[in-house]
Length: 174
Image 1 (cartoon, rainbow, N blue to C red):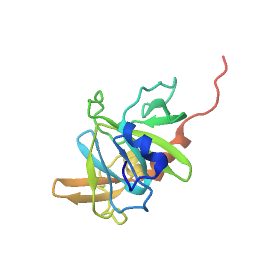
Image 2: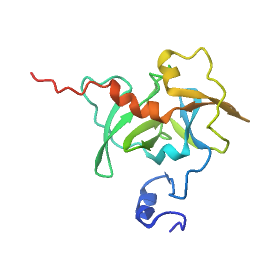
Image 3: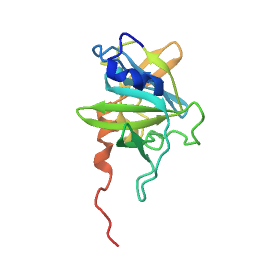
Image 4: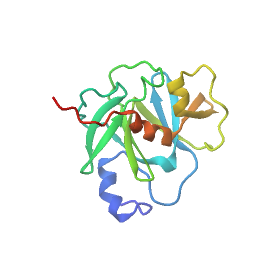
């Protein structure tokens, strides 16, 4: 058992690829590959990284709402940000992962084509995002940082979680 991991999360680690230990909020973030680009989301907003579970599509949902999944006995909305980020949307490869974001009691999963690692630098003060972003992409990106492999767009986890406000929740009666 990992001594840095809370005892109640020990079983979780066996199922998940990565579980963020409750040892404070580390700097940096988790790297995601979406389309041809790399994105980072702050480590403190990531609850878990795991294989993509089976999804149930939601009829009439926007394209970026991939579906819902059972996550620890709760219904988890699962988002595919690629349409909003103007990234090419191909079938998810075997390397695909679910990055579960959580803040202030709001939880959602984001599918990524891959999670290649972590960005160890600071994400709090990124350079401005490129002016060529679409309006949807600009609403989800705080800015950009870079490492030896090139630019990394910094996702605004709260903006991603608040996409739920764009979904029509009214029940449709026939």
